[in-house]
Length: 226
Image (cartoon, rainbow, N blue to C red; front, top):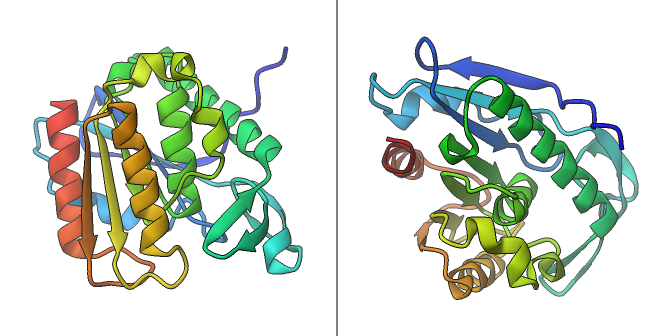
């Protein structure tokens, strides 16, 4: 079985010889540059050198957007009320691509236990799923303005065993018109129900992030990576 080609990434290091990695996935239609500017705003301590990887999703048609081709982690087939029906085959392909990125960081000397998966919106949906299903324990998962794209992939407790105790931070805008806050809360409650130590935070914003949220993420990263 061939290893998937590594996703291209924007790479930022906060210090020399980083000992930790954060893989941060953008939302639908954006790219890896979208969240790169938040790194200085996280307020990470100088003695915590971190490598940030901001991958670019591949271009593909997105059914719910009339087949428009854009960067996407998977196809969204259609909406049903507030639910998003994801192409599960596409989700699985992206899980393989994220696992390959983690393996590449392992090869660079960063163990999985010092890697955090983070993501916004569609990227957060992958961060949730890839993080919970990874075969080795990760340092943490950050899920921003997002949902679980294919909950059935998480049904088997055995597949979540390695990350059964991995800390999860979930954040959402209470006025989000794109991914309703109810979807985010459902995802958080599902993950907390798995037994993961999880926290839930909301701000009175729409489908975006705010500075207090970024600062809180910095505190989470400092705690799980230090």
